[in-house]
Image (cartoon, rainbow, N blue to C red):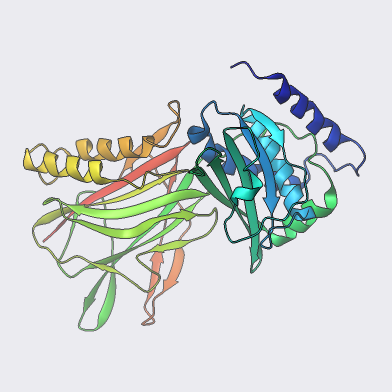
Amino acid sequence: MRRPAAYWMIAVSILILTGCGRPAVRRGAPADAQGAVVAAEMVAAMVPSLGDAEVAWLGVRNEQGLRATAGDAVGEHILSAMLRQGIVVSSVDTTETRWRGELPVPAAAWESVSAPVVVGGRMHQGGEWAYLRLLAVETQDGRVRSTSRGRLPLQVLEQLAVSGPVPELDPVEPLSLELSVQLVVTRVESGTTRQLDLEEGGSLLAGDRLQLRLTVSRASEVYAFLVDSDGERQPVFDSDMVYSGREVYGPGRESWVTLQEQDRVYTLYVVAGSRLSADRSDVWRQITELIEQGRVDRFEGLELQDQLLEDYVRRELPADARVTAVRGTEHTERGQPRNIILGDGTRLVVRPHIIPAQDALVWATSFLVQ
């Protein structure tokens, strides 16, 4: 792809600005490394929707719509990540104009920009974290083409704010995706909760209940659901952005999915990727058709169902993205045992399944309910 002269002028200007006139940063400093990784993840999530479009970089503003040292520090990492990803940046906004209103990127910030797409973001603080939201907006009609989210510990953000410009770091390789799945299954008998082991192809009784506890190694959209052999679906974890290292629960920390229907084969799916399509109507329709045609019949033909989910995950990813599909404990590792204490005081011991992938993954396990 041939880049315009403006691109190279901006790239050179960035190197000059980040290399002169401000204190040097120790190469490979932890704060800079974390900032670079978060920026790379956020930009990578937007690349598929940007295509070859030239973009104008608007920077990062705080909750009040103002430029601040911390936002500029994070913004330098994001701009650097865009250039490394090959995004054509035609201009960089260096003004101090306040972004008014509640919109993440208001129209006033880009109404005079000639580039077809602008990229900018907002940052707000909550607890011990700084949360970032990045948007790509079309200047012709204001349509949001893409959005991505990330977060940094406040301590890291403070270090970035005082450390000066982005250092000359080695290129940041996108992190591989690793999913930790804890499938907790219990049976309540005579008021006593008993833990059950469930493997691929195993069986449970109607009235047994399950819960998911999930952790991802990098910020990803995650969605989990059950589908039975009659085509009935039930959400377990609604599609949401999950940040690295944060444990989430499906359907909730003290909530369970109770398996009601007898003599049905259930499949539990967990899908994760940098971006998942919100339109799942085609997937549901195709699963129903497979069942009606008899191509998926209880435990038979489940690989066809798995392929539909894999294709769904690929929709929002680049053509060369690698999607890993895993069923049961195949190609998984076991994590260290963990103690879980339920609300009724029952103590459980679980060992998570660790599932390695590159860009996205689909994990499935099927079982019979009698």
